[in-house]
Length: 206
Image (cartoon, rainbow, N blue to C red; front, side):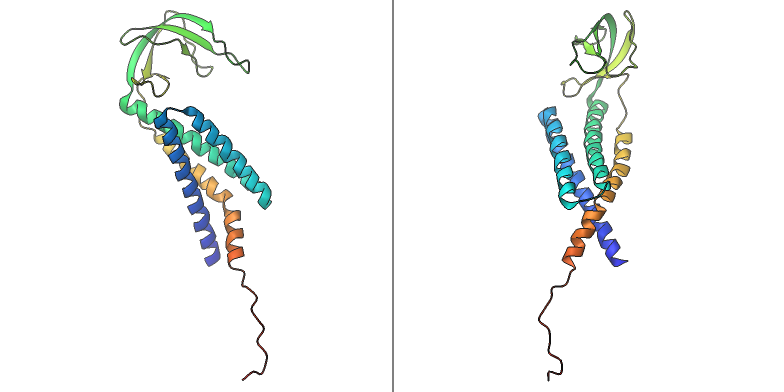
């Protein structure tokens, strides 16, 4: 029973440490306004995680941990963006003047590009749709929330609330990460608790 408690505490501590590292990287990328840091971090964490799993011959739970780690990265980045728009975002109303197809990257569905007139704020560059559910029409008036300093992309609708959902979803994702770390923590503790063979004591010695 005591060993299982130690393994659980070790796996939870490892998950919390990884969460803190990802949090630090996401904040650095957010402050520096360098999204490429997030992409580089995601690739480095994923390949390092898979490499360690292959070296230690771990089971499928290790791949689950890689997915949870990337999930933490995505949720924390989304949390910071929504928190900024919640605190400093400005709601503006735009009228669509023209719709055209974006150049895209040649992969998947090509998004549409909306040329708009801002009714109550400074001009905006053409807006690229995010997802298939925009359905804006020429002549329609819609609300968007923008960051006055341009640190995060604009979002449709009024200013969002605090990022409660993103914060809540990090709990089960963190538990999944701790579950993936259970086996490595158990192996490490088992190696540390293996007694070293000392010299044999002769029988009948005074």
